[in-house]
Image (cartoon, rainbow, N blue to C red; front, side, top):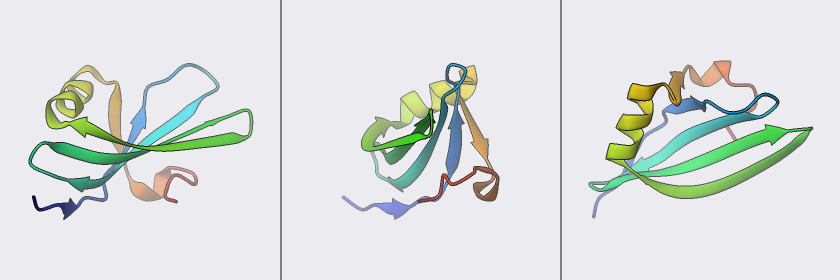
Length: 78
């Protein structure tokens, strides 16, 4: 399976007081390897996950994910 670098960044719709971003690290035939970064109360939590293409497309359609310019997300590129 071949992977491709994919530097897209998204803001995740969350509850008040939590800032969450999702960065696509690589794409594959089945979906995306992503890095999720959440900040709340001065703490940061990150996790690396896999997400299907269909789920990403659904989240974009419903507004749960919004693509942002990489330099507009404060500290999200780590």
